[in-house]
Image (cartoon, rainbow, N blue to C red):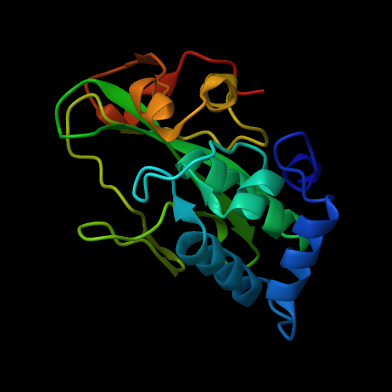
Length: 206
């Protein structure tokens, strides 16, 4: 689990401001499940989704997401992973491949998985609720922001310790929230059989 606890360039929980926020959220709680719920609800509710609020700057590092209180789903997942790892709770990054309007083109959507002793890996989506979008923390039941409904969409099974390069490249190279929206990251899927659930990344998961 060490890689899911590490501080890194984008999940930089060792930055004093990120560490302090993580410990503040955990104050008075002794159970990992309660700390996870607090961190999840903080990122979901207090960090504004860049597109929903038409808000700049574009953020990527967890510390920048916290500083500016805004980020796309990918950036918000970096902050949530950082807050959890700072509290010694293993956390990784997950992705869905979705459409915006139920028809292609496709793009990646970023969320998290947290390892809870009672349930194992459990996915949570802190992108931010709005009309028609409601994600909650209610283990062992997953309540994510978006269902898989269109052919070609997929829940990608990997739990990544670090963000996919295709994601960070878009965030780093975009100057405004509109730039990100115009260049949303995507990956190619390889279908092993007719079931969408068998889709897998062409990328190396290591």
